[in-house]
Amino acid sequence: MKQRLAITAATFAAASLAAAGAIVGPSAAHADPSGPPVLTDGYGLTQVDDPSLSNPGVPAPTATDFTITVSSAQVANDTGMLGHHIRISLPADYYSNPTKRYPVLYLLTGSPGDPCDYFDSAGFPQLNALKGTSGMIIVMPDGGRGWFSNWRDQSTALGAQNWENFEVQQVVPFIDANLRTVADKQHRAIAGVSMGGFGALHLAQLHPDLFSQVASLSGDADLSRNEMVLREIVVASLTDALGALSGVTSGLLPGTSDWSACHPVNDPYQPAVSSDALFGSPYPVSVTPPFNDSLWNAADPTQHAAAFAGMNVSIYTGNGNGPGGDYREWWLESSSQHFAAALTAAGQHPYFKDYGGGAGWGHCDGGHDVTCWDADMADLIPRLQQAFGITSGS
Image (cartoon, rainbow, N blue to C red; front, side, top):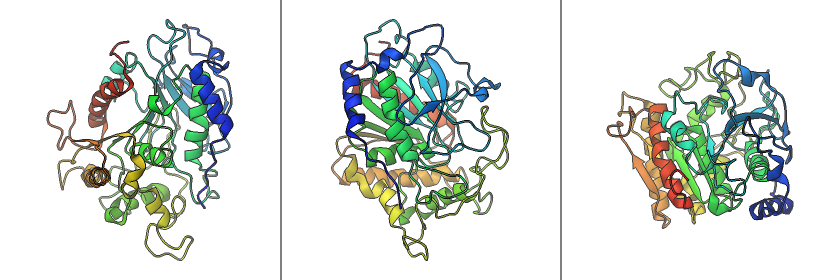
């Protein structure tokens, strides 16, 4: 069964006190402008020294842009890794305004990807040019290959896979306790790329009390039976079905590759696990519990559009240049259209940007890649600033 830890009253009490500046937490992040702040363990996260963060290609830490490694009982470590990475970007004025508090954007990676280098300046030059003056703390937590969800099956070769618990029950309160955040829904956003786009929608759907802004950048926004091909893509990431689904996994599962500077050269989708490990069977009828696709339907943002009431929802997609182009983005365009229509039918007003083949959208080529996602972020950041009441550059 899907596991979820209840957010304790103590967690919210700590967050509320943090918002009021009444706890010691943020002062424990010593303002040493010569290097990253010192953060205090808590909420089930233990920081560990990690030599992989010194690997060539991993951005060097600065006082305002750094990565920590944490261990957690909620999510097992990958083979050969000491924990999970959380990259943190602080506003340029974080140290010069020691009493100022900031909104937070949680930015989730695609798959395969590790936040230690996923949003680097080579792939996301516009994001990196904007983040220092965004007026926001930007937190990029690990999502592994877990789809930012608590898995039905916790006994696979991957071990514990409670990614929802990790992000919501641990990372969010850890950040609020250690950094000068405005620790409430109205000043908290979540966005993500591809798998992370689904993750942003999924976590906001399940925790509408935490986020006021949510954005999907080429995310899997429709996991209903109408988009079985997207269920197949998710399953392929579980079973490491490289080439098994013609067209579906093309360009998705790289096999053995140098996919992240802080990981060894390997296949990021190994070890393979059961196709049912995440949400059970993707088919309407099954011989394994829950004997149908009810968990997929429960996790589908489109079927739960009403859950996004009171949030500003942004949806970005291209068309992959149509059939014969990038099939992944072509399918995701359909998924995004379904989600936008469901939100509208529920009485909401989503921001829906379909840039088609990418003409006029930065350097976007219309595909499922960083050229488009960086342009998406260049559009999203100013819109979040407006929603948070931030004057650009302040």
